[in-house]
Image 1 (cartoon, rainbow, N blue to C red):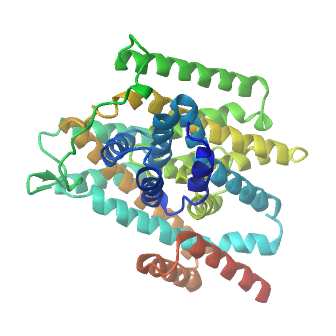
Image 2 (image 1 turned 30 degrees about the vertical axis):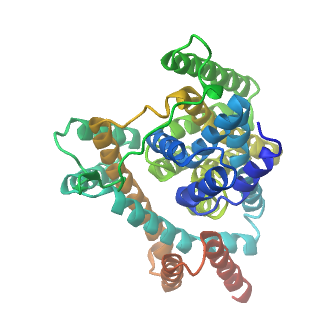
Length: 424
């Protein structure tokens, strides 16, 4: 491992704003252009693999780059430091939210972010929809998924059905232009030979390596889950938090927005969040560095906090730590298991169609979340409120025009809410 590499990974984690696209851009600048830990071809190959895997692709890409630099220790260092700054900040904000719930100014600041969150979710639906709904068949799948979700179908079931439908379709769901994949826009680069320093152990095939690594990480997950269960952490909710957010990561095909709406609904149904706190969770995930899946850190803190008034802070911290740990264990397991195969993995035509269909279902989930949040923000108590609509429009325009970054927009919306509370 290169001396001082931890400083680079910590810097990347602390400045990883802008969602997956911004985080991948930062990784490319540091890993390929500045430090030359990966060449362009290998970076692209690893990025394709991480986009196919469930979980936060930018964190997985950082883990792979760290693995290539320093083996398992390097991958753990890179993947962990990519997450730590955002996780600590989200935990602190969750504590402020919970402790200040009855302080009018703090409550108003969090309430002020809600129209901005509606704008963020709407833009996410537009951005992802443009990439995912590239054919009439994909649009039909999205409409069907939206109807199913609105009728109460579970998100995992909708994703499964969409994937099967896409896999079985006898035609591409994404149009091609000039003989190249419309998603890629370029021909596949030639892959250089796999360096020997991170190859599987001598005498072990890549498939054997993947199976052994998966078994080891499954045992690690099981041991961690047993400890959390036996110690009754997070006010006794630790085991439920661990199970839900492991499932959240495994279902997040197509990025965090694929599963965040479902995770929020599950948390509300379990009493861990109030319906209005879905706004606050999304605002914290969007406005802090690191992957959006850190929304689970916010949820985990509140899940623990709400169990026991006497030990609320300790239970909240335990809940945040458990949610974060179990959301990322699967990501480490998948990257370490498949890393030696990164240059040879190619999405088959069937897999490509399945992923496109799942992407269409993801758009439906985001649209439904946006509609729910807009209704709650713009029609509080059934009365149309013009101010939240104005804040949402200004936020959307500022983001679209590039006048302000997401953290600035969220902070400005919070300031408006606090200012109105102070004045009125």
